[in-house]
Each structure stands twice: as C-alpha cells, then as structure tokens.
Image (cartoon, rainbow, N blue to C red; front, side):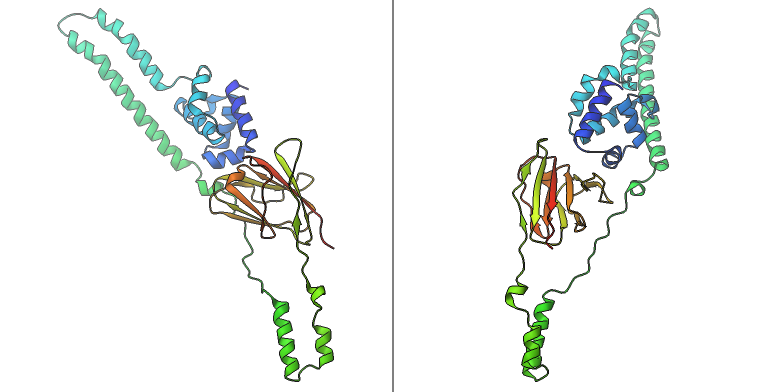
Length: 302
C-alpha cells in the first residue's frame, strides 16, 4: 500500500467512516476509493481524475488537500498539463535549427500545435465526464432507504379523562360511591417515577462517555441533526442496531426505540452537530469533543 493511501485510510478510520460512507459523501465509486488507498491508479478513468478524487477524499476526511497533493506528488501519475509544459520547454531547441524565409511561420507552429493539443484534451475530458455521468448510477440509486418513523399520535392524559368521566357519572347516579372509590386511583399510586440520568463517566480511551438511566421502563432515543454527522447505534455485543447507519444531514431527525436493550452505544462523527434526547430529555455531554461514543446503561424499572 502506498504512503499516500495509508495516510488517507487512517484519516478515514479515525472519522469512523466506512468505504460505503465515503462513497455517499464524495459520490466517488467505491472501487476508485479502494484504488486510491492501495495506490492502484491504473483503474482510474484518467490521470486527471487521480488528483481530483484524492482532493475530494482528503477534504471529506478533514485533511488539507493541497498539502497532501504537494507532499505526495512523486507518487502521483503526471497529468496532461505536465506533458504540455514539458513539450513547450523542449520546443525552443527545435525552433533554433530551422532558419530561412519561413522562420516566423515555423516559430509559430509549435504554439499552434500546443494550442490545438490543449483544446483536444479539454474536449476529451468533457466527453469523458458526460459519458461517465450518463453511464454511472444515479446518486438516488445508491441511497439506503430512509427509516420509517412512527408518526401516530398517542392520546394524552387518558387516565385523567377517565377519572373525570367517572366523577360525572357518579353525580348523575350512574355509579355509586363505593364503585367510584374503587376506580379512583390513589394519588400515591399514580405518582410517576421520574427518570434519572447519571453524570457521564469518561472511559479510558478518552472518546467514550458512559451514562446510567434509571427510574423508567422505557428507553427511546431521538437524535436531532443540525449538520453533516455520522450516526451509528450498537448493542453490548457491538452489533449494529440501526438499519440506516450513515451520515445524516441538517434537519434530519432519527428516532429509535431501545427499550429491549440494557446497553446501547451511540457513535457520533460530529457531536457538535447532533443533540441526543432520552425519553424526550436532552442529554448534556460530559465532554466537548467532536467525534465521541455515548454509552447508555439502562437499569429498567420493574
């Protein structure tokens, strides 16, 4: 593997991106991304695309693209512009040989040839881009189907409404005092147990913070995204629970019911662009870092 490919791959892994995630971000086909990481530029459609794809790759994983291209230019294949420059450098020695009445015309010929050569290159690149655009799969074909969220509105305060109806029925003689006493719940029995989320504990790896959820029998997550960030959810066995693990964009809201789990691990590529709500309660991050893991240990209320 080439040094340039190794550096790019390490930056991708530190961001928590898979090759599929990077394909979604850059719109570069996965086989070209693999070729860049392995230093196999022969599979590229042309030397022009090598630099363009590497620049997009570096930008996506947070590296300085210009610095990367300059540092590893010895590994990259030469572009048509480099060949043109070399041709222009060599042309004066050839012009000096020719002398005579048509000297001016001969001196102008290399410039005309170079100009035509540049025009041919531009036209060839344009045709290649158009053919690639027409033949390649559309961006919508590669997208994973979006999650379907439960938008059904559940009735609120149904117990309260029932109690009020029972009181009205008692006044109208439909219920006797004994029955109403039995069906009216004691205030102590109906008092809700308030959930509690412990202060975050930072794990040894420095990127993981653990929280403990108590006082509730449900664990429902809602993640509101304000900018591009990778989101993934796993269980204690590190198995993916989220069917739509990917980079989410501003305005998207992810909802996930994890009541059946006693442990969930949320991976955020950019925590500054995402808010986590646990049963509609906003989670306060214990540490302000960009890429981090949020672990929730769920002690379910029996």
